[in-house]
Image 1 (cartoon, rainbow, N blue to C red):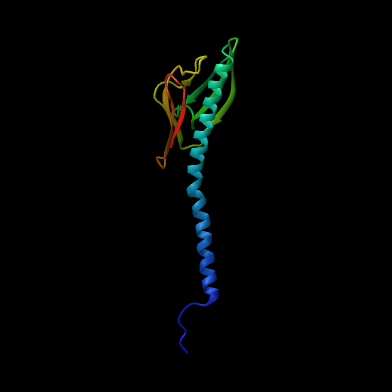
Image 2: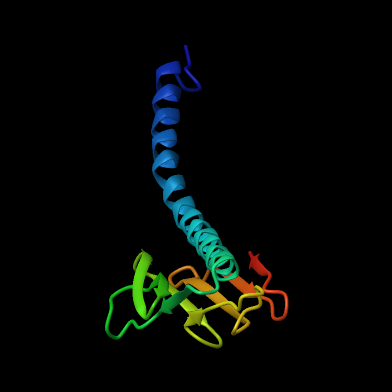
Length: 150
């Protein structure tokens, strides 16, 4: 009797091994893309917070400082600052993972006037260095609208 084909046990073992390999590989591929999206959305929310604070309380000055100084730090970060009566305090600081950088085309400071228009309209890019993936955040002049381009 000639046996051609595979037994049920052999098929189950091969399918089990293949599923383990796929389960190990797929999450690693999608985590970096998710992190890039979440950091970009978080920065947009912080920029909108600064805009709303500057409009609601013009006496206080709220701003975001972007830092991409990789010569002095091993990672990029940004901080939300509040200035009141010459006292400057950091409300929030967000550190990016290694391999991500923040680039800006005008100024590292993001500030708004009391009517919601930006002091410097600009485009901010968050870049994942190893994959080349990026997200752009644009602050539109005159309106102060904040756009996330994917």
